[in-house]
Amino acid sequence: MRETLLRAGLTLVTLLAVPGLVLSQAGQQKGTLHVSGQPGQVPVLQLNGRSYVDIEALARLTNGSLHFNGDQITLTLPASAGSTPTTATPASPAATPGFSKEFMKAGIEEMTVIREWRSALVSAVQNGFPLKDDIVASFQGQATANLRLTSVAASTDSDRNAYPLISNVFDNMQKLSNKVLAARKNMNYISADSLKNDPLFQQILNCTRSLASMASSGQFQDDGSCH
Image (tube, rainbow, N blue to C red):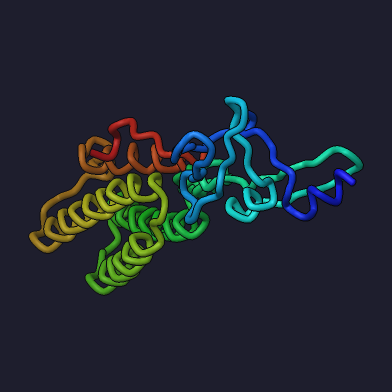
C-alpha cells in the first residue's frame, strides 16, 4: 500500500537530508522548494513544524532517479558539474636530452673532413709538398656543406649548444689553411714542426678532442677548448 502511494507521488519526504536545497515559505501551510542550479520549483507542505515534499516531483526537478526496494526508497541525484572529473592536460614533452642521432651523424662527418683537411696541411708542411689551391678548396667546400647539414640537423638543446663549437673549429681550420697557403705563395719558409707551436693549430686540436669526448658521452659539456 505504501509503495503504491509512493509511486503515485503522494508520499512526502523530509528535506533535511537533501543538501543544496533552499526553501522559501509562502504562508504557514504551503511553500515552494527551489533547487540551486535547477529551473522550476516543487510545492512544499508544512505540517507540525516540518516541511515535506513530493519525492517524485523532487526527482524530476533535479533530474534524479528513484529506486524502490520494499519499504526503502533511494533518490539518486546527478553528479554536479563541479564534481565531474576533469581530464588532465597532458604535460609538455620534456626537452630531449643529449645529442640527436641526426646531429651526431652530421657532426661526425664534418669533423672527419676537418681532420683530413688538417692532416693534408700537416703532411704538406712536414714533407715540403706543394699545397695546391684546388685541394684546399675541395676540403673547404665539403666542410662548408657538412657544416650546413649539421646546423639543419640540430634539434635538441645539446645539438644547438654544440653547433657553435663545431662552427668555431671550421672557422679556425679555414684561418690556418689560409695562413699556410699565404706563406707558400710568398715563398716564406715554414719549418716542419712549426704547426706544433702554432696557437691556432693547438686550439683546433684541443677543440677536436673536446668534441670527440662529447660525442662519446652523448652529452654537451663545454670545457672552453673551442672558444
